[in-house]
Length: 224
Image (cartoon, rainbow, N blue to C red):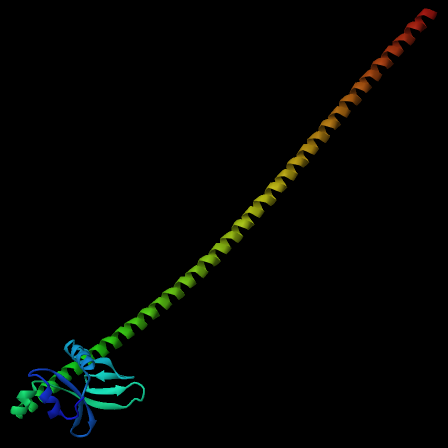
């Protein structure tokens, strides 16, 4: 692993991206290991705003918007940079300024994309909250409707029960009146039978009295 940019540039082929982190300000930089460098370059080319790389036993969060790395264990941050075409840089110092401008433009664009993504996330969260609020209101309205329906059902059941009870009471009253009418009719029949028997007995008594008188008259005539 090389410490200075110039020593690292001698090792790199032209147009090969090189990722470095700052060891000591202002000019001491160290190149990332090959695996970590490839991971950074893939994330950078994919327009990701952040990625995570593992170097030895530590994990680092890389933020391309601010070109920084942060040790997840210690929270310590360092600047990072990406260089290209090291031979051209060595021959043409003006290329550093051009690369810096290009890198700054890339970082600004990535920051704009990140801000836009954050706005979309906030909008999505607001829409999700509104959706949950609408669901809560709908659930409350459904529960209220179910409560009103249950109350109406209980009231209807009570009315039906009262109606049935009234019908049963009316039927019982009608049955009692019918039974009473039958008893009265039976009693009237018995009275009529007794009256008929009494009339028959009275008629028989009258006949016997008439016959008895007739016999007495006949006997009186015979004695004369």
